[in-house]
Length: 152
Image 1 (spheres, rainbow, N blue to C red):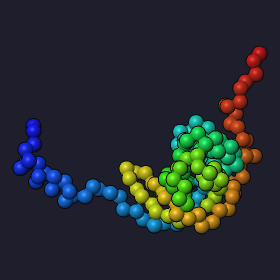
Image 2 (image 1 turned 45 degrees about the vertical axis):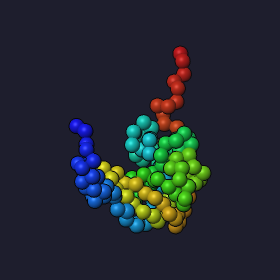
Image 3 (image 1 turned 180 degrees about the horizontal axis):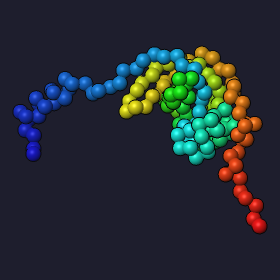
């Protein structure tokens, strides 16, 4: 169907009158650990406890440097995908994220929710407690299944 100018004008006006359904942001302060979202959600390196803290720090650095988005695992158990921290718009592999990997922080910023996901634009890192989850003695720094078995 071809639109004539007389039909197109009212349709265009209707489209402009109804704004796109943008998500409203909500200012929050949330405390949690900066995590590697790939390993956390996929389970490729073990359960949720094994892919946080000092046990997973090196992998979190590699994943972030490789472009995997970072998240904040909040004390509430929710994961917040980080879109930006302190103006560093590289959500993965940015220097800011590499410096905060596995750290427990309190973030102040804007929360956006869409399709069941939490997105966080961190405007300010209020506190940085460093790596507080010292779990490498429990889980090791490399999961057992990742170590090659010796050939017989």
